[in-house]
Length: 230
Ligand SMILES: [Zn+2]
Image 1 (cartoon, rainbow, N blue to C red):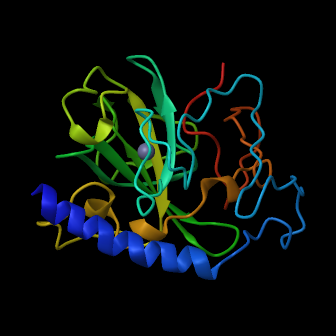
Image 2: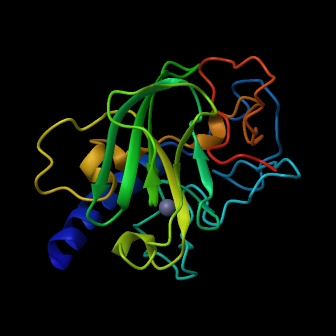
């Protein structure tokens, strides 16, 4: 199991690094939106609202949630946000729940089809490593809706690495069948190795993490933070 997983990861990651190598610069400045300064090539500077829980392991990070370096070919395909037991997890946009299942490595995971982003890309969001799932497959949900909570199961599932956190990831191609030999993001996505950078889709602009605000009019094609801000 371990070695076949490793092989799968290596193959996928080689493909991913080829793709990354061929797209040298994020479209930050091309879109002409908010122009956050870029720290270095491929990096979008992240702006947090004061009250937003931080990202413990960022998109494309090689530093894992457990403080260990990932191998060079295993870059992070989502963002990790730590939280206490019971931490509410909320929908980043309106959508339809495709899955609310317990995946063998990731644990309880919700997949939501959030429709099409402002740039025409599909937004298939994975909310992984949950403790409790409050919605079920087929449920129609709205932005900001409570969909689940973190639990005390961080030692029960290998992919949570003993550190309680939400893993949030956006793919475009949902895997609806042929899941028998798949695990982790690959169980849910066909293109999980080419996941979208969530920082391109915040409602407030590229790199500007945007908290859900029940009073503001949601902009379609954009997302808000998957945890409430205090
Ligand atoms: Zn993660």
